[in-house]
Image 1 (cartoon, rainbow, N blue to C red):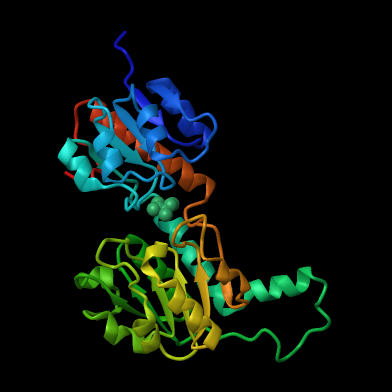
Image 2 (image 1 turned 180 degrees about the vertical axis):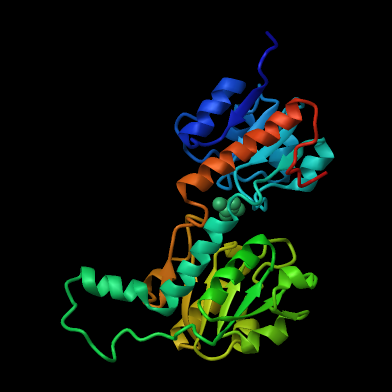
Length: 322
Ligand code: DGY
């Protein structure tokens, strides 16, 4: 029997994924499930030809370059790959793969949840009820902006942005979007394209960030751009925390220029900016966009499909650096 390839799996994964990995690979597990630091990552990969990682681990240039020669592939359990230096990997001849498609619907659902949760002041309502402060039904309490007939601006009209647009249309929102390039009419589905983000912001009563984080769009939503949004706008981020200037958003939430924010992602997770906790108009979630049972299974299986293809001598379907 040919020897199974050795892979290093950096975190505990759904049962079905671990079972298939154990069946097909000689797996080095991270039994503690702790988030490993660079030196531990490199040491744990010492026997591995493949690595199955998560967005919790940082594979910066130095870490990638320090990996043993035998490492051929890094498969990340995520669609985002901003935690991996893909150029350094390419330089080392290491292929990097991600998990597109399978988390689109779950993440778009969660973006809609954030939009509704923020605009309908769900955090405040929950807090009031749980603290025993609900005294009576009140015609003028916990009011937030309705969705019907308003405009949602989507930054990044990839798969998740488009899936959000489909949901948002059903809630009566008009869709505007900003993207690197204009979509074909079938994909655009009547949405209004803005080549410049700055022309979309003034009409976006709701704004959702759905683009990947790159070196070029750090703090994309800064003080100036927040200032272009209409007063009382609602901001949603289910993409990456790096896209938002926290100082600027917190100031805008405090002043009321931004009525509410629904945030599932943060800079420096899990050590996010704790000032958000003091803001009643911040609806906050701990990066659970893809956390349905079905989606997490599918993400793990997709990682294994990529590893399988690579070790069978084929090009992995979701290679991002080749
Ligand atoms: C991703 O896949 O990039 C998400 O942020 C985690 O599901």
